Amino acid sequence: MTYDLSEQDRACLNHFTERMQERSEHFIGYPSATDIDYSELYPLLRYRLNNIGDPMVGSTSQINSRMFEREVLSFFAQLFQAPAQNWWGYVTNGGSEGNLYSLYLSRELYPDGIVYYSEATHYSVQKNIQLLNLRSIVIRQQENGEIDYDDLQQMLMQHRDKPAIIIANIGTTMTEAIDDIPQIKGILKQLAIKSHYIHADAALAGMYAALLGTGKPFDFAAGADSIAISGHKFLGVPIPCGVVLVKKNYKERIGKAIPYIGTVDTTITGSRNGHSPIFLWYALRKLGKEGMRQRALASLELADYTLQQLQALGIHAWLNEGAITVVFEAPSEKLRMQWQLATDGEWSHIICMPGVTKAQIDAFIDDLRNDLQTPGIHTTPLLHAN
Image (cartoon, rainbow, N blue to C red):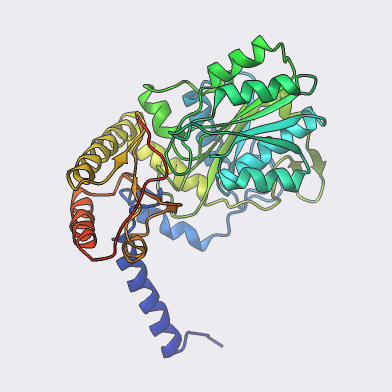
């Protein structure tokens, strides 16, 4: 007996596909590259690839992509200057899982530690802190979204008898600000806090910041104990995913052998998507470091163009140094919905990820110009940044 969709269901699916195509043409407010064609990999979707357990250990379940996952991990270990014989990681479901894993690891290292994170930190961190029942302190942010180092130092000083677990943002959600890990390390040294753990949440800017190497250092050599990135942002993998890397000697404190799967349970989830590592591997191999670097430079150029166009309209707009996120006064709700602009308070932003085109920016600017001419439209910035 064969089964198939009804005509009504097929029509519904076709309508949804057309809708997604149209919405993709007006997608400039969230970070997802669209310039890489992954269709060559689509035949692999017929296989149920499951990377259950530790990617570095074999398993009796052999419908998996561990060989690709290990290559992906090795690439990022090199990119982020992980200690040669002392790193470990796995492909996650996204940056939020990478943050959860790193907080879980830091809790096992320092059960009485306090987590310090800025008010600009991704919402997943607060959620993960609640899940792990960790004590935490929120630190003020500067006007550009970067952590307030003076406030951090004061809070650390008040609790210097406790281990410090610090979340450093490598590209905040709204303004793409990057926290200065060497400066944070300096504060910890000045206060003689030897028991500490620094996690770099590099989901947004980690890849291209490392490739360009022009901003604040944030990798393992700079003092990070773990780093999490997203794969569906700068690389535009069609399945949400990410990578987390940690120091191996820290990871050895957790995990246990599971006879049923013939491997070691060292990750957050049991079954893990085995397709994402292949998509990541494909992008890394297809583009190479130089190809990815050129994409990043093109995004920086487009961000500068976008900033100029907004300012030419008299809109208060700005961006952080080395960022591809342009922050500006929020337009009308209609325009925010049409162009899917992430908005916080009275600020919106455009993220010039690879695949966003000059033509899209020009079309948005035209719509914004008309928006400004509509009676009753008025926005007032909440803050000013350099």
